[in-house]
Image (cartoon, rainbow, N blue to C red):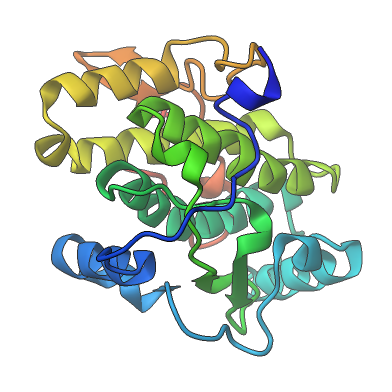
Length: 259
């Protein structure tokens, strides 16, 4: 498959269009109407906070070590236990991706135009505890992705937007990518369920199949979401525990696999 025809081709420059609401305004209206609370942690227009960082900024070892150290001090503040970095980074990543992915999925699946979701377009500011607090998206159209069907729009998100985040965390050596992708699968399955009425049953089932039951993406690379959730008692359930329960004061998930 040539780059020109690949669903993962780099976003092209969009031709000027008349009488079209600016994309940031369109997305803001969608968020406000459907999930207004997204706007509490996601800014679609306006300047980012001065202390916000792109992925290239926060993934630097010194910066990421500082963020994780602050988060560890917060989580273990009332405990004398030795810190366990694997579950700590698992929960840190759950905060980051849990605030990031539902808004981006909503944007890609409901707006007429697709957004450019490459990491350089996104900045994050962090809470005093070290976890992510807010995202700032430099809203631009990905003209190529605009013409793609919904499952391939999401595929650009997994490959261009999420894979680099997982790689940055896995590079620390304390957590493996499979655990992070397992957490992502649980999140994605939940939010697709939230959107089921808007998507319609046919689109809902098609997206779940594409996300969780295709072993490869359209470019023939491995799909890390494959079977991160599996059928169990008539529902799709996560296969592995996120390990957050190993942290002091953090409860098991209601549907934890260890129960």
